[in-house]
Length: 242
Image (tube, rainbow, N blue to C red):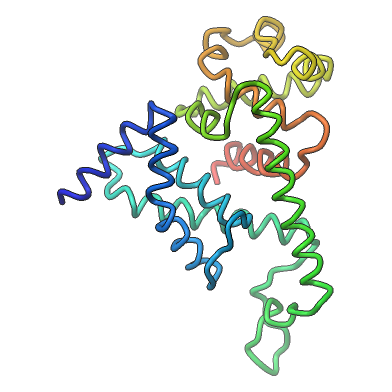
């Protein structure tokens, strides 16, 4: 009970302090790796895509945690598992794969996933993992030019559904007006006035979530196709409620 109480206090501090959030994720990195290993059925390497996604999921659990939700580590474990499942499904779509859980034939119980361990598939998987890692590294480097880190963005994510929808409306407006994205890159400043007026949203709301908006708009500049795919998946889940 005492240990759980201490975790709750640490999580609550991390929700408003990005440095505390970084320290918390480093402290519980063994836990994150363990949960990732449960999904992968092997221990992840440093920098592996699934481990990075699990770390993001842990951040999300920190930001969304409330005492009434129960034990934090259980919530974090569920969040990590769900994010990894989403990633695996997206990866399969990216590779044009059918469900790997489908039986390969009527003669045995092996799945298609069991049959795909050949050199060609392994090469494609390594290429995709490498591309994802490089894209995340480049995205992080671009964020640094705005004076931001990934943890800053995670800390600034909207917590209310209404606010998330407002941010998505701003993103949709910016995508329809590419000159605003060009302005973002050129000036390294978020064009708040144009976005607020153009998307017909409250400027104060945008100011409170400036770091988050910089990140999602930056993802729609040149490159970052994998990150954009992740954002689209989140947007679809918000629209459908699943």
